[in-house]
Amino acid sequence: MRVGWLITLTLLSMLTVEAYRPLVVYSGGIADPALIFLAWLALIDRWPRILLVATMICLYRSIGGISSVIELVGPVAALIISVRWFRLVLDPYHPWKRFQILIPALLIAFVVQEWLLAGVVPGLFFVVNGCWLSVLVAALLFPVLDLVTPLLRSARYPL
Amino acid sequence: MKRTQSAYWAICCWLVLALLGYGLQPLVSSSRGDADRQILLEQALQHSLLLESENSALFDRQRLLDRYLSASFAGSSFLLIPARMTPLLDPAPRRSSARLDRGSEDGLEIGMGVIGASGVVGKIAAVGQGWSRVQLADDPAFVIPFIDDSGHAGIFAGGPEAGYGQPRLRIDPIQIKDALVLRTHGGGGAFPEGLILGIVADARIPVSDSRILLSRALHTSQEILVLSPILNASHR
Image (cartoon, rainbow over all chains, first blue to last red; front, top):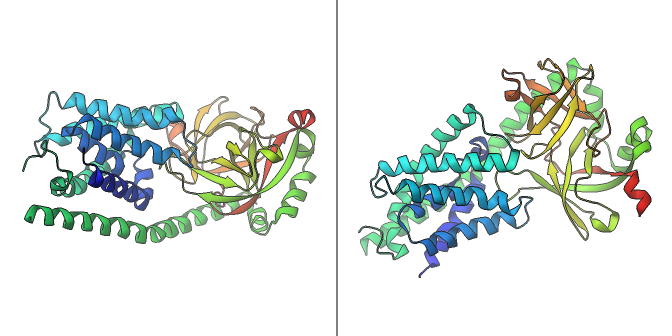
């Protein structure tokens, strides 16, 4: 498993989260570039690589933070499981249909995150707000991620 | 080879976009900070809190101690432990926290209330030797009871945006309206009654969508006081 570039991309996605933090907070955490990268990976990549990225994201957010383990792992696990479940019924390679996998999966992760964090289900305002922002971020990020697939050296990505 | 070159170019573009985001952050935060300060100023004028907020910027540690020690609530049930708070970006984007320069050696414990010159700052969330982490009042998991001017109670929760909170629940029939000053209820044991929590900046229906503006000094480096319950102090 060659993971050099995978780690680089994960770090880059976490750097992007910090850079666009006000936007991520405004979206309620749905338009989180690190989670969108993880969802993109979960669409077609292998489990060990997905778990590696998920672990890196959780570890980074746990060090020096006040979040508990369940608050970090819960949304990430919900996102991965949702993506893997939705890809059973929708083509993850299709340029548009993968958005139909991504957005519901991000929403489920968001609801799990808010429930674990604040104990409430988020209001419609934040769901709508978060949805269009996550579509915007994913639309910017997915073409870039599609271009970097040769560096990931996996047969799962179509040439 | 061409595809690999495109990949490198894509990564470079991504990095540039991330750095651009870092560059734009001060602009976004300063314009929004100015707007927040303007709202707070207007609300403060209406409630004769202007003098209080002006003075609050000048408080040093001793004046902060003097202020709260002279108040009737402070001396009775809490020990005041002064500390220096440094704002810190929590790695989890939804969380809001800060760091203190004092920790378990001074008797700080998880759950203790933290107050500043402008009122409630947060609660201690983690403690170690010589350091502790504060869960700030705009953190979505920060929940305390509040009262309005008439003594009607409700439940306050932090977030969803930085620097704001929201009334999660009304225990009594409170009418949430703009410029309403909310104070701590005293229940829960972390804070005494009557400390300023925030001002309603945007009253909405349903009430839980209303926005409560918290202290503008919440995310700035400042002297704070940790409230240690007297019961704990007597055990030490």
